[in-house]
Length: 448
Image (cartoon, one colour):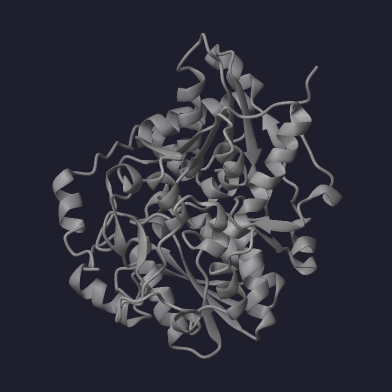
């Protein structure tokens, strides 16, 4: 009988991260200084990021060593298991093989902890005392709260207001790790006060929360800013997911025909997919699917253009698929996927037609999540439900040509049960973002 879980020993955990940047066909456009429209060097970002992370952000090295201190903390939960979802396969009546990389075993319950630990470490190395950040659903805020506690740093989290109200136990987790959390927009920053005055009933957005966190970091000498997705160094840290998964698939005697991950800013999908990129470029037949909400269709309906990463236009300009920095998404329960832009790395891979983007609706995702919980026993986060939905679609697409499918189970949903309550009560609905609203949101893209 084939083993359901494939586990690596701690000594088999990768000791280097993989940097995909040198292997992307036609490269990635550089970030631009918003004032000069010229490529932004490290000195532009130094006020809010430590130099160790800026070196990784701009590195052309394929492999970067994972410091021993980070490895030791990783060993609390890594290597994470690779699991065969054979009960789900039976329920679907499919001959496809479905595997998932289970990142919900981390202390914060998601993949976010992989980068949070690394970012806290490099800030600590350079004498930083405090980190500010934003969080959507609360997974990143929880992860950074854990990581900053491990390295003795203070942490201030600006949590998107709609999630702040939807997910009270995420706040409890962050408080347990010693972080300070406020709903965004907040009265703690100039940006927050301006938005509250102009839009007092706003549900908030990641773009607003980023503006607040960046303003916080720029206003204090003891503080730097930490971001949970989008940027190159975050995707670098997440590559440990795919590096482990490749080893585990080899042990299982399998290789995926299809790779799937949900996409908000791009970190968890890229973490699984990028270590497989060179195989695909060398001719391996491999379908890579990035799944996003139909209500926040960055890759499927956005524009590939330079844009700000935040509402207040304080960040460098990133060349990415975007719905416009003014975009305010509907209050769907997959809060980690409600971001207007996509990682420049993911955007470049979509541009090159290496990644196939798709969008799915909220209700079908929750239906898939419930099926997964009832068959495999793990309740997935609303974000992860998007990947599960895509996996089910692929597994049932062609009965005469069954595929081997690997998806990233980016986080468990044990702190998202209020969302499941609303789903079971019939209180959730689908959102199709109107085309006229997308046109309006992209009208103010910067001229480059």
